Image 1 (cartoon, helix red, strand yellow):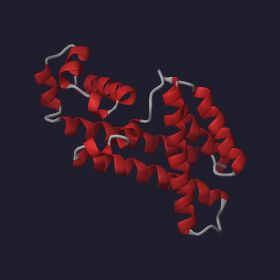
Image 2 (cartoon, helix red, strand yellow):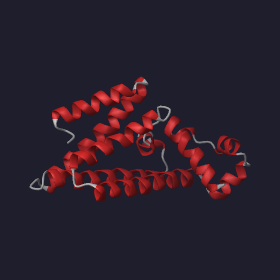
Image 3 (cartoon, helix red, strand yellow):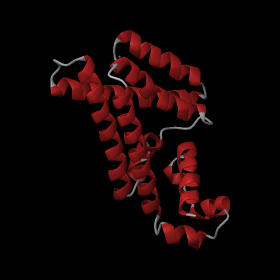
Image 4 (tube, one colour):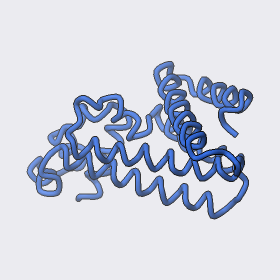
Length: 183
């Protein structure tokens, strides 16, 4: 049941945001009583933190696999952009932690902490990729470039979602490549 609740909650957050999470609605969707959801996740914050933590862990594992698969920084960056595109292609959904970031003021501290870890993990991975392409770049330049890429891709996803047009994401990513923001 815990897994079914997590799957349903992830879909809800990616489609409607953290504030849309309702234990009653999740219970109805999964076919259990609301008390059963509370058994696994005593508070909405516990559920949100568990979702963000899992999302970060799964993302980190996938990104580590990309780095292990290829030394080609451009190839890795293409796969990275594809992750965010895949969420859009799945019923116009957002990155789970990206949509939670938009609701930062409403998030309990434990959820905020997990969302911050997601951003740090992404920027850290981007720094590793960028250092392959720019081995002589300073740590500060790599950090700033990594943050710029992360923010730009999350932003492209958000704008494309708002317009309900995945081609906006595709065109924006191409523009990022043309201008040199993305390898």
